[in-house]
Length: 332
Image (cartoon, rainbow, N blue to C red; front, side):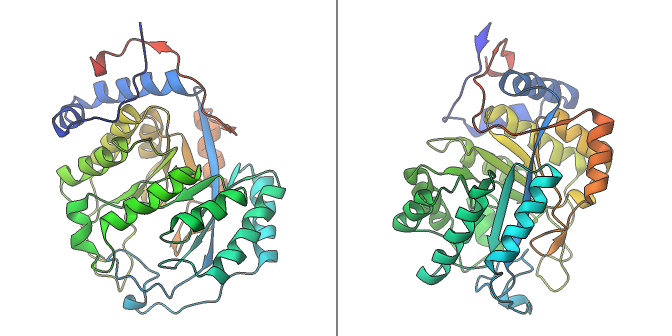
């Protein structure tokens, strides 16, 4: 019997070999590792609120908030609305409340307003997560001082493909923000979107980049592209269901103690596909969020019915439990 191995030196060849493992074998290996690191049949619930819609100066080809795609800008949501939303989310069973703003980088004035929102969320005994664009070290430190638990900054795709779907941002800048967040002592939430026209290698490379960070992201949201009319990727071909599930399993194997979240695009997934994703190691969802930014999300009642059918229980884990000892033939 061996301990679960936490690695930061994965090679593409190793990851590709795992990805190509016969499907049922891959899911079994992922589920074995999942149960060594997390309680079986549990799911962590996060709720997302978009506090600043539209007006983003970036030209990301998938995004429905970009000024390049004709989206109208709306003002920043007020503090009272955030408190009301967080209170409702907690009552519904969420343990984390997430805020998103469509900024390239927050100004001092906007960051001060977000900090007040973070403090309000924490006062409700909820974990607080935000995504408000790139940060410098001073901004990350200020958010840590306010009590922020998680900062979301997705890498979206591989470095190679990222440059093909946006021209106003660089991959290095995104990696620098993750560095600032880690240095501040804030948990990192970082994943990506599948269905951006990427290759299989791009999909694996995204997970390699995340797994080979100095510390694994504590939360890894995996999204399916929701094609939005008026964006350059509105006619992108959807990712195959089995390919997406393989990516979920690969994320679980390569980042054993991270929460792997089914995020955007769940509305496009059947109950059976979501079930296979949970078996492959997904253990977090965005729940009771009417929208994920500007795209639809699964209705709360639908989620509760599925969770009940599968026997999944809501959990609130401030710290990831230490892994149990299991045989790790997958890593030998």
